[in-house]
Image (cartoon, rainbow, N blue to C red; front, side, top):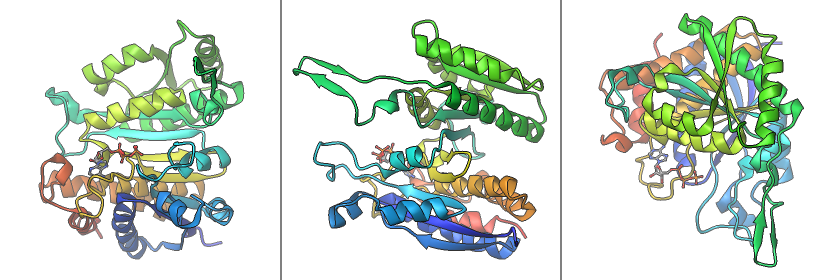
Length: 363
Ligand code: ATP
C-alpha cells in the first residue's frame, strides 16, 4: 500500500469554520505537490446551518464517512441563534468525540515567533506546552443527563474511569517522550486535578501514578487546578504536558490560547486509539464570519498536527516532513513580519495569511 495516499474527511461546519478550512485546504494542496502526498477528500455537511436546513446536525452517513476516513479535518460547528429545541447548542463535535472514542484532546500552547504574547516577561517567547484535555468523560459524562428536581436543585455528575485515565496517562507520557526528543530536554507530565477535595480526582491521581510507573524517562508530577490557573499565567514556560479532566481542560486550554495571541493561534487534535480529528480550538465566531478576517493559523496548525499524526501512525516520512514544513511555514510567515492577522491588530485576512504560509513552505 502507498502510505502517502490517505482518505480525508473534511467537515467545514459553520461561520469561520468554512473560511479557515478553505485556507487550510489551500495549504494542503501545496503540501501534496511538494511532499508527494495524495489526500482523497470527502466533504461532509454538518453543523448548525445544516441542522436548520435538514433537521439533523450531522447525519448517520456523515458519522460513518468520518469514521471510515484516515483522519478528519474539522472547522467549527455551532451558531448562537440555531439551537436544539431544549435550548442546547448544536455541537456534533462532542458527539464525534464520544462516538469515535477520541479521549485525548491535544491542545498545544506554543508561542509563535512574531505573535505578541499576553505576558511582558521575555521568557514568554519560550512557551511550549500541551494541555491534554480528557474528552470523553469527566463532567461531560453528564451532558444531556443532568437533572433538575422540582425547580429547586440541579445536578450533574462527574465520572472518572480507570480505563480512560490509564489510556490518557499513557498517551501523555508517549507525547512527552516525543516532545523530549524534539526539544532536546527531559519531559515532564503534570496531572492537573483537585485531589484534595474530590474522591474522583484522588482516584484519577492514584491511577495516573500507577500507569506513570512504566515510563522511567519522563518525570511524573501533579498540580492542583487552582494553582495551575495561577502558574499558567505566572510561569507557563515551566510546563510540558498537562493531562486533566474534561471540564478543566476546556477552561485551561482557552486560558493557554490567551497567552499566545488568542484562539486564532490555538490548534487542537482529538485522538483515540482508532481515529483522529483535527480542528482549531476556536468556534464559528459569528461576530467576524463572512468578513475574511478570520485568522486561519489555528486551523493550519491543526492540519500540521494531522500530518504529524498520520506520519507516526503510518510510518510516513513524507507526512512527518510535511507537518514540520507547515509549522515552520507558519513561524516564518509571522516571524518575518510579513503578515499580521486582525486578531492581533493587523490587517491581513484569511487568504493573505494562507498565501504567506504557502510561500514559506520551502522546497
Ligand atoms: P464556541 O462557543 O464554540 O467556542 P465562539 O465562536 O462563540 O465559539 P470562540 O471560538 O471561543 O467562541 O471565539 C471567541 C471570539 O474570538 C470570537 O467571537 C472571535 O471574535 C474571536 N476568534 C475566535 N477565533 C478566531 C479566529 N480564528 N480569528 C480571529 N478571531 C477569532
